[in-house]
Length: 457
Length: 105
Image (cartoon, rainbow over all chains, first blue to last red):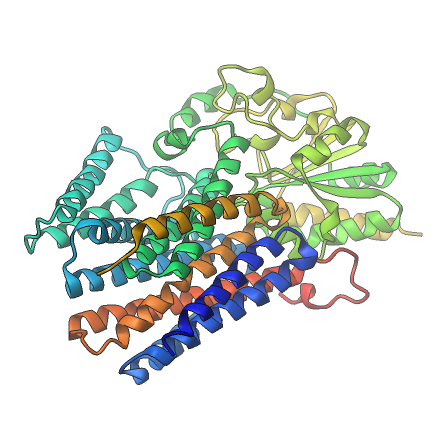
């Protein structure tokens, strides 16, 4: 059996690589999941066959985990996918951390093995608490605004530094009984401190980073256990998360440091509130909006987190159906950081049965706005703010935006005139061709649908 | 403790570059499922938990830690794969003939 196991692991690794490869297109993606599952199953069965004792414990553990995991995946509504992902990261990272801890007490290693073990447990524990906190913020159990205090970054760095120093001491072979528990304590604390100052709109970057760190923890575990399958799987996950977080940062024209330590959306909110008063805007009723949409030949809908909050995606689908049936070309423009995690809007719109070839990314669709009759913004704000192009001093300066302002008519569904997450006023609202549609996104789109439906024939 | 770290580092480096090239080609449409899939894959940590739970030299403390890790890693594997598949099922190119699963709340 011992000679077959490495071969099984090799095939499992192949399965994981193909799984990621086939994610490149929706038509092959499900095949990717299946090959990934086969790889995982092979590896688990192979490992089971080699276990010396306690098969009952192992099977019980697998059964309990499945009994919790399956309902989690099936019962969570699609709008809760960011929370569920955060929770998954926490579970995976905790597993790496606990195995690292167990290995430490089993072997009390030093040297390179201890170095890898320290990396595994540090990343594992900090990802666990950070992901739990991210879950709390996304589920809105905890306040979503960044929480900051004076000297926050200094305290965070001291805590991280403490963990690193202890990790290095342990690696060098010092092993007082208090050191490893203290190391764990610092790692857990740093995870909390990392996410405390992060606000809702920065969650896509942070979730991607935690995805990456959970992967690197698993890879480090591969070094501790001398298991190449773990190294490969962890490296794939580590780079996937890292690349996604880089894409998110670029889509906001910000650096990692600024996202993690800048407490964005905190300071500017107060300053901008004053200037937002009493500038005239034009507003329209659902009837007027429906008439304009009906008379247009091309419409681009720009969804944002507000659409998810209002659960408006199904009503938008109905509107999409009615307009498409009348020959209007309706498409969706998806900004990379719209929502609370990378790709969040695509999942919600796909759930509402919008065909995925109508969901276009920023670079694909931005050139089409000048030829578009109506840009309809639903629950998005900063990602369509023209100030990002023009105002050098704006906090969102240089952020690539969707060119909604170049469409012939702009319609914005919004509850009121409050500024967006970045806390800055949106010039788009005050343009002559802009109509503000005040109300709840779901209700307002529902009224447009009713209006369009009654006009029919 | 006869680990081959040099070999491990080569594996890590190559896998990381491969991952980078593969993920770069993933459509932004699928960034959410990609994240849950890659996370489920790295929950392969479950094999470490199995080996440690079934290790006859393990003390009660070690076995308990490994058992908890086994449960959390399994949750990560199962929830990760199932939610990925659930999301991918929703991505359709054309209008479905009759409203089916997408209509279900």
